[in-house]
Image (cartoon, rainbow, N blue to C red; front, side, top):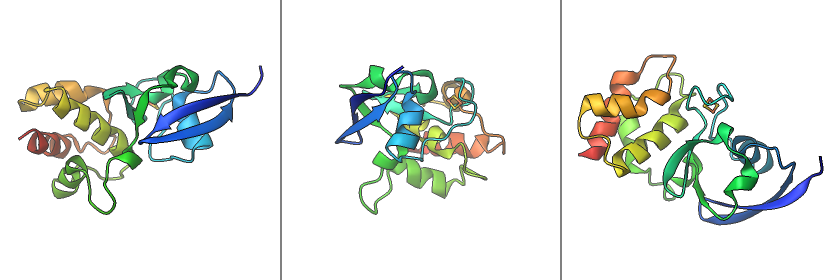
Length: 153
Ligand code: FES
């Protein structure tokens, strides 16, 4: 299987990389583009640590091939803050202690952003349901939900 060139649009920048066609979006982000904020927990679509936005919708980046996401707008955790200014979801996670070890946090935050944007955070139960694909082994769930609900307003 040969290495081929592909072009990805990540956090508003066009990036070119060389990788095998079978490389996942998660591996392309982490290993080719050095964007290591998206985490590899399970690599099987079961933990949500690798969550990114593609054209505004959340996906598990371990479950999609990089090559299939050419021409789409990919947003990772690195793309949320504006300079020194945290994205409101990041600020809310800080305020509500929405993390302990922090490993799941980038994925939680990306899911939270999509949750609010798509209108799934109108109450705690609905928010928990939407966020249920993002596992937190420390059990910070109440604080995570509080953070997402605050941003939802
Ligand atoms: Fe992708 Fe766990 S690393 S869902």
